[in-house]
Length: 382
Length: 157
Image 1 (tube, one colour):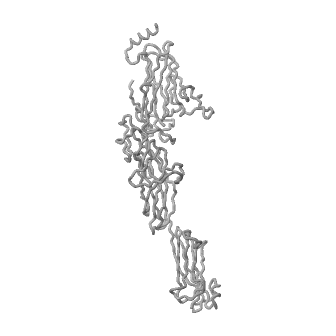
Image 2 (spheres, chains in turn purple, brown):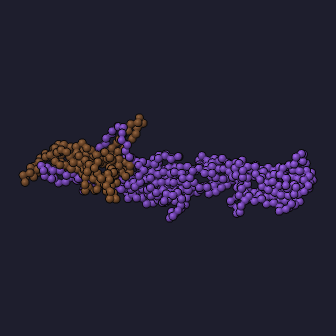
Image 3 (cartoon, one colour):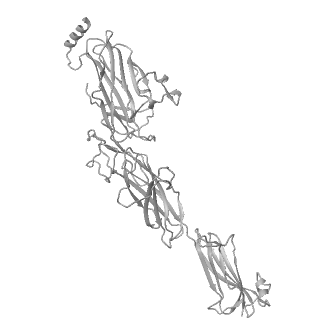
């Protein structure tokens, strides 16, 4: 009876068999020798015969190195501001094989409309599968072109890609950051047949042919799927994250309205909220109101906003107030202590000299998208 | 005494030198390579299992033959299922022999439908992955000149 024979059966397999793709963990370690035996007992004419078995020389086979991995993006598309730094996207890389592996990590920004700056990669083995660094988990820095530390079968690695947005990046621009991981031989393999000559640490794992060239040594089988930019069965995987730029678009204007040609007094002018009925003229003694109006027609919040205006020497400052034509107007900027927005103006009525006084300024403020903020300044023409 | 003399004579008359008592068996393990072709049909190729990838399906075959002059009776073939593989349900041959299974390391055997395990003090039906041994008991004698194959499938964990 020949020990090697090949059968070719062309058939439609009706039953579903759990082949590679079974998500169960605890895959058999690469390089394991599986030993198989049998025993055969029988009688002749009622007398038991010696047992036939292969215990002295079991049938053996070696378990291959299965290379498989996947990456999923943990952080959904995020909004970022121009000139911001440290914008992070997390990815989860899982070793679905049966050997320790190291990985080469790289980030591609193809498909981006702005170029992210300062792209850095850090990672950690996420022992509790939480997605964040905690407990005894330790953050590793990653140097491009180098291997990661060894990652065990079924271990999950959270990879954090950090980048900045250049100043002046326009509203609506976006960046796609694609993380690519390629499988490398580890420093320490679980496979006893993996010697430095066949498995050099840091070398890419290449699929071995199906010709069973390695006798009693595990072959490497690449069984990965195709990620966003990579092919199946190549030992690599990829996944993308997106950063959308939301920038404010500010339009500022300054207008002046004559409320009353002759209000009679500082107090009477300050009490007006609109122009009196009839034609009003700008003559000495007239009551006027300046309105500095800022509108944000963009999609991002204008942060740490400041405005300053010095009244001309021809007027007498009376009072200044904040107002809005939308719902909120100027709001507090959390990056500055205290509650904003802060309007700073002369504490009492004063004649302006055009150079050293009558300064009205806004600080500790933000202006959100679709908001309009106003500074109204009451003054008398001198 | 007479019986063994007859047996010895029978052995002397045999042409093949390998197996003195007549009944012989050989274990062959192959792995399945499944290929889907473009026309939708599926090809299954069997190759000797030298290196096997987790997830591969294996065919455990036991080829037997009786080269002797006496019939072999009450033939019982037992094949342990290694811990690294899971038995594939309904894959054991049933033509020449009655098949039974063990889930307790070979201490006891039952038909598949009766096979139970005790977990945390409670009895329940055994899962395919818990089978530790496959045993075939031949219904009839194996006559001189007869041969055949018994097999089951298993998947490498």
